[in-house]
Image (cartoon, helix red, strand yellow):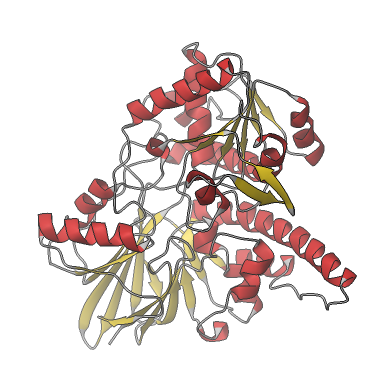
Amino acid sequence: MASIRFLGAAQEVTGSCHLLSSAAVGKVLLDCGMHQGGDAVDRLQEERFAFKPAEIDAVILSHAHIDHSGLLPKLVSEGFRGPIYCTRATADLLEVMLNDAAGLYERDLERENLRRARRGAPDLPPAYTRDDVERVLKQCSPQRYHQPFAVGEAGSVTFHDAGHILGSAIVELTLQEQGREKRLVFSGDLGKKDSVLLFDPEVLTRADLVMMEGTYGDRDHRTLGNTLEQFEQVLHEAWERGGNVMIPAFAVGRTQELLFYLGQLHEQGKLDNWQVFLDSPMAIEVTRLYDRWLSQLDCEGVKGLCSGDQSLLRDFLPRLQLTPSTDESMMINKIKRGALIIAGSGMCTGGRIRHHFKQRIWDERNTIVFVGFQARNTLGRILIDGVQRIKLFREEYLVRAQIETLGGFSAHAGQTGLVEWVSHFENNPKVVLVHGEPEALDALAKRLWDERQIEAMIPTPGQCLAF
């Protein structure tokens, strides 16, 4: 009998991690993600595996976002030595993202240990090192979409395009147990239809168990047309106020779409005179990776991209300025008005966006534009919820900047897209909803039952399900 234990992203949006146990494949992790929110040092001190890493036989990774992959170095540090299966583009992204996360963690840990030394407290040991990141990359086993590969003694996995970010995958896992075939489908994060650069999520029709994300299970997004109109209006109003715009953006996916749409506004003469800064070393590297993989993406209407004749960094936005170094980033502070700053992290849990907040969040002329989901307890969520004061770098700041949210740029399917995707399964599989806050999952489960008579289970953290 196979079983799945829900160890992360169970009634929460981050920390995706599910343990599959079966005689066919042994012990296999579906994702190994870090929880988002708070200080990175504190988060890693609190992360505990509910299993012995050395006993895990393999990891199957849906995509490279840190809330799905960020604990892989810690897993390796504590003894995991098996293969990490992922798509080829995900393997490329992991090198950038895990090294960036390690660099931020090392700096934060160094500062924390300096504070502890001043109090006479002992140093905190690192949860993992750069050597562990290198081991993760060496243990990666990149696979192509639609080509089955063996896992364990009697398991087979096929990756399908999830349409969420570059390399994102729906995992189809087939097990042979006691002469019977069982099929598990794990959606990972599902993208929405008609996203620029990405194909629509692929549809599957057969499974015994479907694990589907429900990040936006309680609502649909605004249409792209309405979102672009809102974006244009927000930028123009900020320009008229003589302010600056700060956009916390995820380095993978969201940043590349923003550059594309800003390029469109520029071509249409609707970008005013904004100086656009991509102030994220990781986003710059990831965008270069997107350029490398453009021939594999959906470039309908942008044929020059797929032909290799154009670049997202070089051709679509002439006003774009790259600021990879710290000194270049700090120079942006001297611009009093007309700076449009795209910086990580997407949920404002770290990175350069917090330094830009320090310089500008107290000025009512400025605007912060959120273009992606903000998980509970993150700084981004706190700002959207209307907090009046925040603490940054141990100092308090008044929040006077305008706060705007653009839902139509989301890389996740909305409620209707999720319902449509799971409704394609023909043999009445068990459906489990993960990767969503309780209210969102409850709303999604209700709609699935009311409209499609699909009964969906919402597991609690640590719950185990046999199938």
